[in-house]
Length: 324
Image (cartoon, rainbow, N blue to C red):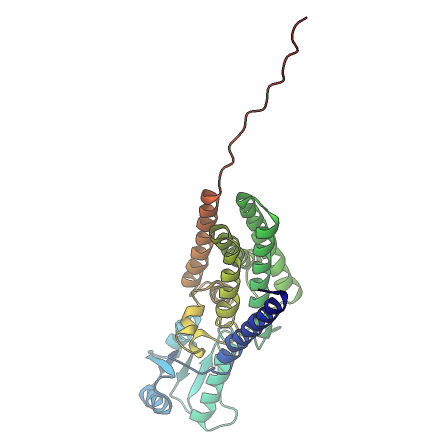
């Protein structure tokens, strides 16, 4: 291939990547809608509310009937549902948790207006988002930097550190330092996350290790091609389907569920659970991140195993001068 053809081929490949990235990021954002969104209903008219919601869209909500308002609150706080509609004693009241998803809370507030017929319907935010980030914009913007920095760290370690074992040392260093520093910024400076600093820093460090470790691990096992596979997986699938700015149930399926199986989506869910819900719902995303971290370590081990050993050549013995 001559130089001109090579330049044209690279330009076309870059344009194709650009088109794929545009689809990956814009398509989910333009198709936000409830899809089996867990919602509780309570009170004497719970069946009527459920019927109305089903008539509007049978696939929008996964409706669960609970005993009363207290049970509805408990279901929200334990992350079993995103909100609840409580009937009895006047117009229906809506309970939301903006900490779980500001986008869902906004949609449920709209439902409250429809059910009550009042422009300013009663909406109670059971678990509110941080007062310094009420719309969740700051929280949503945290995921991409964690992913990008993890990819960058993995690429640099792969290209600049020849020893695969030492790349593991670099990964551990990046995870600890990155977790502590990122949460110092998010909590100490920006104040967009409540909760235990050390617990959140540990999560950020685990995310950093999982993303960077995937890059270095695949590169160690597959060669330079592994860098591209890992980077594209995290950027084109993991980040746009992380639901950091919405909720998995608002994204097109099955991509909302797939996103939760990748580090960016698991990171967003785990940070929400620990920061706002006292760890409720943290088990699944934590296991996901641990699985990715373990896979990274295994891939590094495969890379070490496949690295050819250089035979040790005994040092030449100096020749003794003949005796005179």
